[in-house]
Length: 415
Image (cartoon, rainbow, N blue to C red; front, side, top):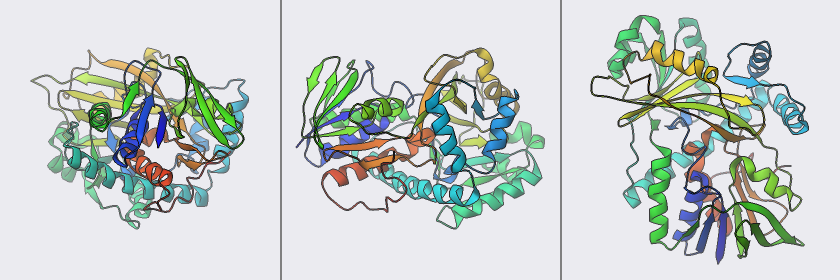
């Protein structure tokens, strides 16, 4: 069967890999002139089932109010006359009660655990090296009371298979010597033993080479403009390079997915969440952390890729613009200097902003909608790197009419 995958980020490339492994003729269409050029190359670098909590939670409305009042919060809202944002925001607020937040968290956790296993198996099978950090991720707390509350919160994940350990400040330093200079500033951490970090862009491009060996073609610099439907069947995809036809199509266009699905009448509840990241060079005299982690006070995440330190944060709901100002990185720079004062050259950072495709409830959109030959694999939010291999394997199973390995409830196509 000929299949066209729309999107060349980590979700699209992993999907192409599993489809080609099943023996399909696969072509990937990507509007940029390189793969993994946006969200997949600017993420935190964490493979983190241990941080699968849904953003829509009882704490989120207060954070949004503080943001509107000018505070530098991890979730920000910029008021704008945008009916799409209003509709998405109302659905987000409906998902904030604790029972819905717990349900959505467990859907994400189930997928993330499965996806991590698929990633490790795939990397071993194809001998892909992608700058993996040390095994284990720190979810760091500065305040003892907040650490206790965090430990209570994490029990939900532990009860569903995550191997985690509560560490005091001395335990953090013992596992990660980079914390030694700031030992008195931290209370401790929940240590996710099975979580780890790696370079998503490097992984995606290495996997693309494996795809090419299996016959996958990559059409770069080609913008997807619309889908064309005849009844309940997609007949073609219209692109800047002409009309393309296939037997089946997979939509993995990140934040552009709703606009393209709308061309054939399928609404998708997604909105871009702008994230910010800085990548700093690590020089000989520096002492970077070997483990990835998240500062729970600021939700700034970090990971080391060989001679680079990546730090990222923020979900800003402000439309589709990718522009940024220096002040947008204040949280990141402050956390970098407070937690790792000698980890990298903070005067030479590479700054960027990217857009994450967020659903109001948190889980991605995976499966068939109104058309029998159009499969959706999109809406991964800030966990695209963690979820990609799992959703790609499931997408291949669905196209082959195989029963997926995990329960897909909570991830279905929804309007």
